Image 1 (cartoon, rainbow, N blue to C red):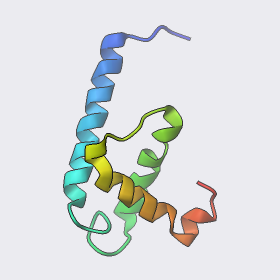
Image 2: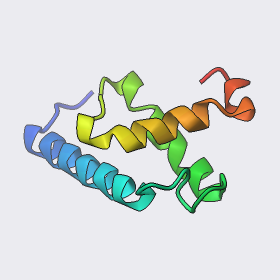
Image 3: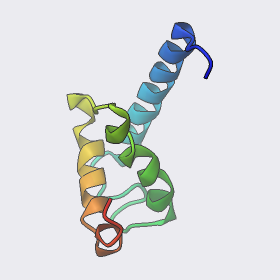
Length: 84
């Protein structure tokens, strides 16, 4: 296993932070990414965000709408059946 480059780790964290804030802004007051209905966009993006907790990355309080969106997706019967 190679050594971690602290500069690259910091860069990756900042890129993730920017992406999460973009997602927050895209969600706005909507229920899902494209409005009031669950779409392929939600199915594509949600798994990538859902794993962050398992990686030890917690969402900042300012990203509460992103957490609410994830909670809403986790509540879907199809997702609950996966045990995520």
